[in-house]
Amino acid sequence: MKTLQIICLAAILSFVGCKEQAKNESEAGQTKSDTIVTLPDAHNAENSLDWEGKYSGVLPCGEGCQGLITVLQIKADSTYTLSSQAMGQEKEPRTFAGRFSWDTSKNVITLDANGDHLKFQIMENRVKKLDKFGDEEQGGPAERYLMPKIQ
Image (cartoon, rainbow, N blue to C red; front, side, top):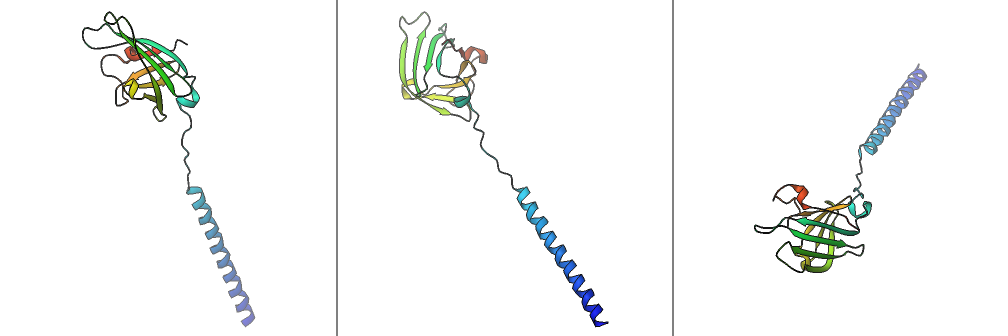
């Protein structure tokens, strides 16, 4: 009789022990599956678009000004040339050259101090002039601030 009790007790203990181990393995697996790793999105205008080139357009300007004839050339070595001429007021364009930096989270370049820290959003075959905070200009429709790629 004692042998039967010992066998039953051993069977119960081994059964309980197996259930506990299975439960621990299940919890461990659950912990692993609950961990989510997010990677930064490497897709941005700097590495995805053919942005190098020359862009031109007539940008809005203050009262009494018909527009600014603007040409922006940006190069792969992070240099730029910007020329701007007020229509009907200036005989020669003002030209600035320097370096620009990228804000890849917004697909925006910022010209250095030579270019008055102007900001342009890089888009497919065009750029858009932004305000000094990197937001869209508020002076009229956004299309007025677009400059298509010409080269």
